[in-house]
Image (tube, rainbow, N blue to C red; front, side, top):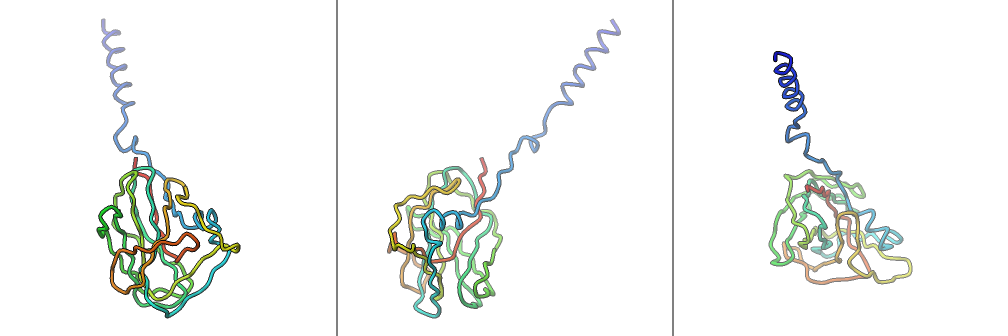
Length: 192
């Protein structure tokens, strides 16, 4: 009898010792920055023209997550030293501003990464990330060809390039499939 009780207690201890704590079951997904893969996939890495101190534009890309996730940081690289540039993340369906980030002390030609409080993104919802300065890189294909959107990049699709000649924070409504204005991007991480 004592042997049966002892075996039962050992079995219970073994089973309870195997239980996983909720943190052990949480999967950590890698972070993704879609910009480099997007530029290669579209051919916009082939030709770069530097534009400095010419008209302010609100310019960026629309994208759709294929999975639920979040933006943990934004990146910005422009061809001029700038004390402050504005980056905006929009929800396309209602053109609402989800987050505005001011990027300080940009150095010409150097990508600056700014960590942000995570911004949760829903699967299959279209967003836009844009920046506003009078400095940008204009990227083309050497054959000056047009790109067919959407472009699948990891857990995201890039849906198009948008811009608007304006200095105020305004949703950009003009599109172009033959170039990319940059360089603005974000660090995306799948959450489930």
